[in-house]
Length: 352
Image (cartoon, one colour):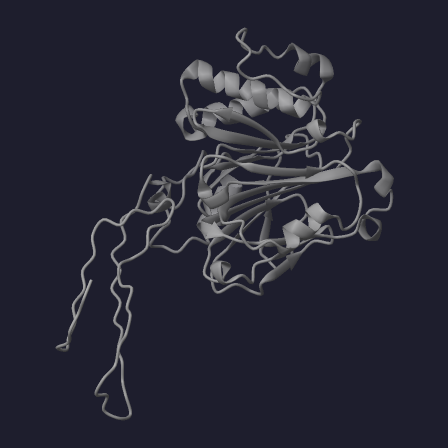
């Protein structure tokens, strides 16, 4: 069975991922085909996708996932140990297409009726065409054609009910556990028939251990960038430790910057809302229907005011001393410096 994994951080993070050897965890490992991993470096519009269609143990690519410390992304999508009929790079998940200035990603666990998928209409101008022969990649092209026809340039422009209806329509023609991202949001959809499984977890600092594992992969969050990150995860098999919740069949969940911003069903929504601090929980009328959480994170941008004091103390009086202080906040992708000020409480010579 394929394994899906999605990570959504509140700020750029650098997780280390170690894939367990096939023979230790999968009895019929020869039936399993490879893995794929995708992220948005520095949370930019372009995605980086690496794939290995051959089910082997440690390889230069899998070692790269574990040891490289420069991922720097808020979104990660992973598809492992699929059961594809063709072990080729172009047929290995996740798949990528470019639309509206962003790379869009899709990973799928399940099988859709080939006749139905092949009949999905794609635009005559051929803007989105699959490179391989999987049902999953054609679904991604079809979804992008639908977005283009409606003038939606990002997933949030569609309206989550519209997207959920499209996925339910696809699900009527087979099995569909799906991860989809436009570089800003991550959508997870659970098959309506109960095929396989998807689970949701949200971790807030201080974290209960830096390492999480499910026997298929190990996720290491001990990088200095990750210690204070809020993280939302979706996985086929829960990684421990963590407080996981099964996504009910037919439900769709949307993650953004480490927050759960939408659930299509009320049961999971109420469970997650109960664990959001009162200051950030959305005030949604009681009853059935979609729920939205963490509205401060849903906003396009936030303005932060930061105050910091630096104090020097010396055991002996200092006659001559030179300090180089770089006190202007640094620029970072996705962050603009609006203004800053500096107050010095002692007389001293200064230079720019």
